[in-house]
Each structure stands twice: as structure tokens, then as C-alpha cells.
Image 1 (cartoon, rainbow, N blue to C red):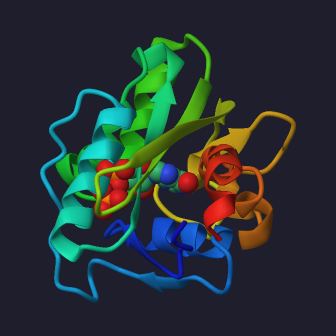
Image 2: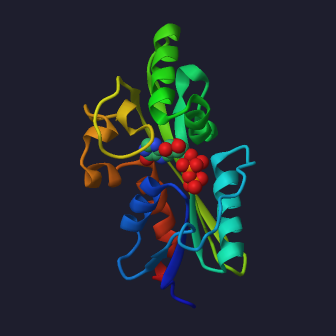
Amino acid sequence: MHKIDKILIGTHNKGKFKEISSLLPNKVEKVSPIDLGIESPEESGKTFLQNSELKANFFCNKSKLITLSDDSGLEIDCLNGQPGIFSSRWAKQFGSFDNAMIEILNKIKTLNKGTAAQFVCSLTIQWPDGKKISEIGKIKGNISSKKGNNGFGYDPIFVPNGHSRTFAEMDYKEKLLIDHRYIAYKKLEEKIKVYF
Ligand code: ITT
């Protein structure tokens, strides 16, 4: 069995790259598609799983490196799960994450049907021979007014259940060890730790 000594973290999102790097063992060399000049694929999947598989397959084929990819997003109950897989695209559509968060807060206020939400993350690892493993992590919580400056993306408006602060008010390590990405990674780690 070949040990994993180098891995491509298949994302252009710096926040995700940092979190996934922190979760992987120190001894594993981490490479970014940005360093290799590899663009992002079109996210044509209909689910987080399809998109994380699509990204892993794309970056693995381009780089010939073992690749770990993430597709994630925020599902808001009263918006029927939106923005979901379109979380990144909403930020583009509205011009920024700040604008997308304002839009979300306005919609929630108007609907007045509660603030329940969850972050979802699908992680896929793919080897150049085509072998792949995926796992999904979810964390439930509520949408709150914008608070905090840490983290990335929608962190300022999400308060995980059992906590009173948004992800963006938490220290880096505190969020790292509870979020949807961590939950997915821990499940995946069970299956890949033999390779480390
Ligand atoms: P890659 O496709 O290159 O990985 P992306 O940012 O486009 O980068 P996604 O398509 O998976 O990634 O979009 C996920 C969106 O959900 C993205 O805009 C994130 O900012 C947001 N998101 C995911 N996880 C998050 C987290 O832990 N905290 C805050 N926002 C998060």
C-alpha cells in the first residue's frame, strides 16, 4: 500500500484550503491548484456530493496527484434549503458575501418562518487510479445578524447549535474543530488513516 505523502487540496477557496490543511497530518505536503495554475471546473452537479466528486476528479486528472476536494454551503430551512450548492454563486450574483448575507437576512425577516439552517460539506478524496472515497458532514444552527470578523464566507451569520456566538466570532481553532468540514473529515479519516 502506498502511503500518502503529498496531496492536492482541490479548492480555490483560501478559507477552505486553510481548514483542510490544518486537519491533514503535518507530515503530508499540501499543494494548491492555484500554485499549479489549474483553474476551477464548472460545478454542474446537483448535489454537494456530485460537485465534490466532480472537483476531485477534475483536479486529480489535471495534477496526477492524490486530491482532496470540498463542496459545501449553507442550507436555510425557510428558504427551502437555499442557497445550498449555490452558496458561492449567490455571493457572485449579489456582488459580495456581505450583500448575499444582507439578502439572506432580509428574506428571513420578511418570511418570518424561523432561522434554522445548516452548513453541509462533502469531501472527496481521489487517487490517480480512479479510486475515490467521499463523506458528508453537517452542522445545524441558526442564522443571526452579522457578527464577527474571523473565518470566511457566511461565517458571520451562522450560530451553531449549543453555542451563542457566530462562526466568525470564534477563534480559528474553535470553529475548525466543530464545523461541517471537520465532521466530514473525521468520517473520511477513519477510512484513509491507514494511508498516512
Ligand atoms: P471551490 O469550489 O474552489 O472549493 P468555492 O468557494 O466556490 O471554492 P463551493 O462551490 O463549495 O466553494 O461554495 C461553498 C460556498 O459556501 C462558499 O462560498 C463558501 O464561502 C461557503 N461556505 C462553505 N463552507 C463555509 C464555512 O465553513 N464558513 C463559511 N462559509 C462557508
